[in-house]
Length: 289
View 1 (spheres, helix red, strand yellow):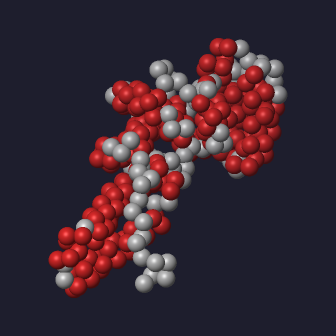
View 2 (view 1 turned 90 degrees about the horizontal axis):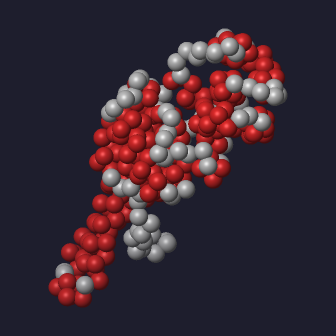
View 3 (view 1 turned 90 degrees about the vertical axis):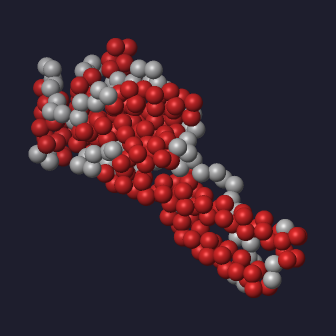
């Protein structure tokens, strides 16, 4: 399920282990500035780094992390051309190593079509790459590819090295299950997510939204049954007036619940939950009579 989050690099920085910058003094210096909150100095060095003709993958990653920490969505878009230019100047080997960084950048900028070219279904290199890749595939309705990535995700869970990686993989898996209407499996995945990690809100709200989706579809089935009951000539002839009024009261009660859930689950969220677009219309006139 698409989060009120996802995916901003600043969210994922928490899960990073202490970086070892092999032979890169500038990356280590930027990291130090970020750690002690010296924003101006960190951004100045980041700009200088991206202007270098040749840079290391660690340097590129650190530059992207830094902008993820400090930049708003609007200012992040202004940095995008600098990262793209720096990326294009580098070797094929470099580009392979920073593929997941580019994927994360485009997902953060909500550019799913561009991000798709950096998604690897067969050979994702990390939990964060699976996390971002699932976001892209679900956004673009590529459910067959998302299913293949979910298989990789389940395998990767067996080798997750930290609770943070587990939380990324479980959230990606839960979002896939939710989208494909496997709600019991989605709830189970979110229930196993470690709550001491940054995505606790997504896991807990995902569980609640899924239960609301179940209730919504139960309401839809109830409304359809009541509509069929009212339209059945044989039954309508034999139902006494007070019985018919009871049917209307039941319908009114269900519609009240339905409208409440619709406010909590707007169209985008219902799509993320794999809910059918077919719905039972409110049978009452607009004046509510």
